[in-house]
Length: 120
Image (tube, rainbow, N blue to C red; front, side, top):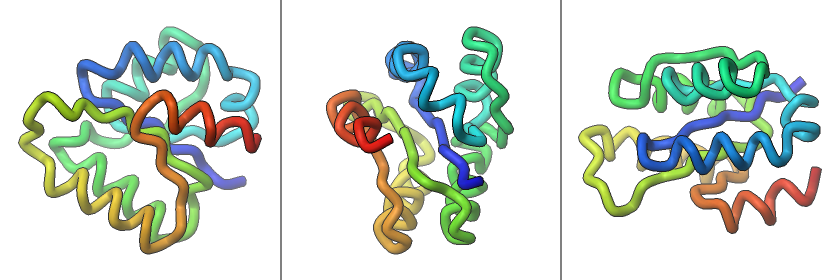
């Protein structure tokens, strides 16, 4: 079973949580992976099992990127905060690049996520 990656910057975690909650029937069909705090939040609040990697700034984005490179990820929900500077922006860009290279769908906002999730 392919994995779905769940990632969100701090100011977007509540948005991702609400989105997953709204679509919990779809997300419960996948093996979920996520970066540190995001994975913990989804697991604790929604009761879904999420394999947690490190937080984004500590290498979690790169760990999920490795899964993408190994063709283990179906799609990525990465709710980004475009208005706040991120100290690990190079890692974020590398993750997005890997999605492009390996043809993995990535939603970086709610509008794109809504379109993507309709296919499942």
